[in-house]
Length: 348
Image 1 (cartoon, rainbow, N blue to C red):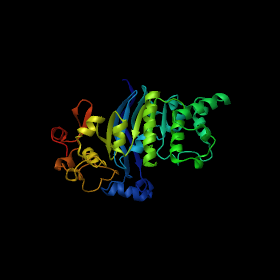
Image 2 (cartoon, rainbow, N blue to C red):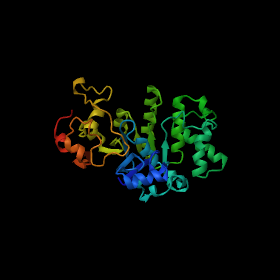
Image 3 (cartoon, rainbow, N blue to C red):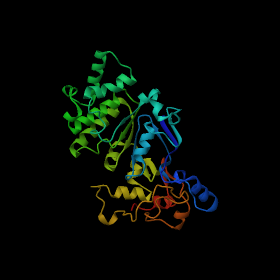
Image 4 (tube, rainbow, N blue to C red):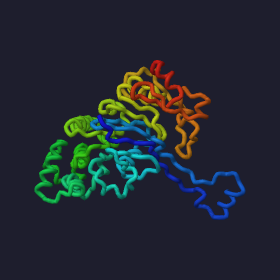
């Protein structure tokens, strides 16, 4: 397989209010010249040095708890938000260098589509299902002829098992599962190469989730798309994805083939996530429990492991030296000082 998407040292930082730039010039001069206090504005490191590749026809899962940077990463990859630093290469072109507000005019806009997290909020209430699916065809494929457009919309509706009689309905007239199908149809209408799925079933009932997930598996096989699948549900990721990356406080802490991650996790954080999967059959005494609270993503110490303080294996050096990636098996990498030892040890 050839690399479709290649991400290099990607960062998204937000400068927060309340720093020196908002103070009176005399106060700024005082801090700068007469004190040793750093008066720079605080910076939130939402995504901090992420890198990975996604091959053609592959499904890559992105997992991690709320606040780890998954949605921010998705926004940059879909070119809905600008990057602070780093590169996003799509089919050899650094699309990260294109401003987000100009990306609509790039040919890659057609090849990268996203299915948003909440189908109830991501549909225009003034558009019928037909208009929602037709919109990207009009704007990106420049389809103007009404009959050709109608046939294409009906064909796409058929691909997602959306009854044609529902095409004239508005979002408030559709069920959650029907909205999800419209959301997916809109994304695949222009035949993208990469489909980004941001928690596509989290707002749906469990019974509807299963149907939509089965549909996504079917569409991937039929259309040959690559998936970047973001989810809190590790059971879903295990079902749908070939490879997995695990994020914690804006950084990747472990990555590899899905079977390796779920059966032979190395990083303590990954082990904690997997041991907490409902219905995993993990004995209560073997659950990996994390103490303490996550560190703040605002101005994190670059010389410390961000998991230090919650890690059951943490030592003093973890607070002084940030770990580097360690290859524990083919395409299986863990960012931990103890990766080699933990790889040889039985799972917690």
